[in-house]
Length: 582
Image (cartoon, rainbow, N blue to C red; front, side):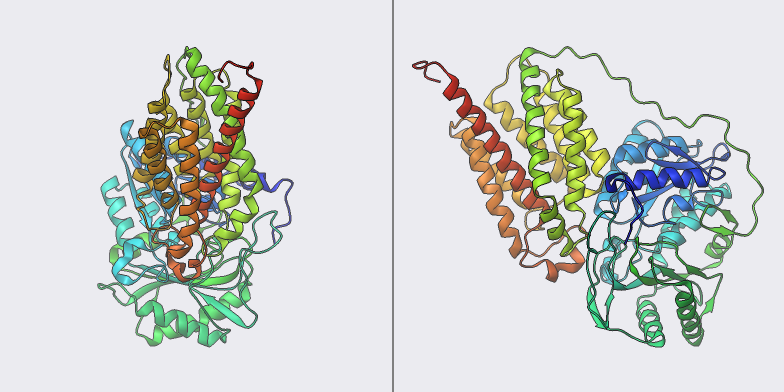
């Protein structure tokens, strides 16, 4: 269990600050993560990696010559926000373009994807290669759906070495894609991990059992097995990886035994010896292997085995020197410290002259954000436990971080138009929450604000347009469809009920009440569905019988907003002079 902290909510940021203090010769802090503190040759491709905190040495520990140029660092087990990725990439860019690489998780795909669009729009050519090495997360004919675990290291190392050698963005991207295709991993857990400040692990493995196919965010495995001997474990891991090898596999492999947090190095070494014997017996030559903690999961008791099938080109870059805080290979010439300041200037805000109507609607938006914060705080533990059934258990804390930041940003922007307030709130939600929910809620809140704008008057049709904009932002960004067991399964019934009531002549408050009821009913019905999106997808059977946490949280929020509006109207009616018809 993680025990050293002041405030668990500040754990990731404070740990990153301390990491930079201890490694100033390698890294410098920027808003959103770290970049190299040493010079990067002009025109070199910048490899920017990243993901949630809690996986050290991944991701910040792999920044340095021969490997990554920068790392975007999210909260515990949560994707960095799009703004964080953007700022790290801007600071890392040396003029040769940017390659983004990260594990294939929904939140990372959303946030890194948004950052890529923004970088490309500014003329910084940016590509993406996601890591998809975990054979337990999807069958071999669905490689693109697999998640990234310890195979992050092989992809990052070869792409970083190619960039260091001066290859252009096309070739660095090509080598990263090839490495990812030739990398396979499988992990096991003997017990779960504990988030800072939490009383219990995200999951437990029954005594005498082992969980097979776990993810690195604390997701439980896909099946449980009696605890094997070391020889039996080696045989299980090797046989499954060899059965999944790429079609063009040769006979030279990199083998990586990776500890996930609490398995001792002596145990890892013992297992590696048995793995190497099995690989040799299978006619394979093990080339420059690694054994140790490389991609961890806080205090998880578990490990993984990764195999990378080499060809001559990949072997050259795998063997190339690297010098980072946590991964060193060969010998590199010393690098001078960067001369320029590592600051990404914030955008200058335009001057706004809000209308009285937009200011009043903005005041109401601030009050609603406070209500949303209250209902999320009230149900934070419940949402986290629900998410832990088939996910990583961070939905409650992620929503809490996001809405806390959104409410504070809205309050700070009081007096502005509703558009400006919701823009500030949405950006803060995305930045602070990270993960899938952060990207979706942040983008949706911003879209609703943009729809409402800064107008002289507002009508019920504007409310309908704002709801449509909110929904469209989520469905276009997340790509989820009805039946995928996501927030969309509650969101679409909410929209349909709201618009139906408005079209029938109902006032906004009555339309909102009907929509909230539809959302809560639809959220409850997601218990009957199997997840087809996100981290819960590989654990579909465990999810059956339990509603989707994203749908549940949306239903709770919709209901609280409806109750707040009803309360305001009731107060206004009771305060109105007798006989005025209010």
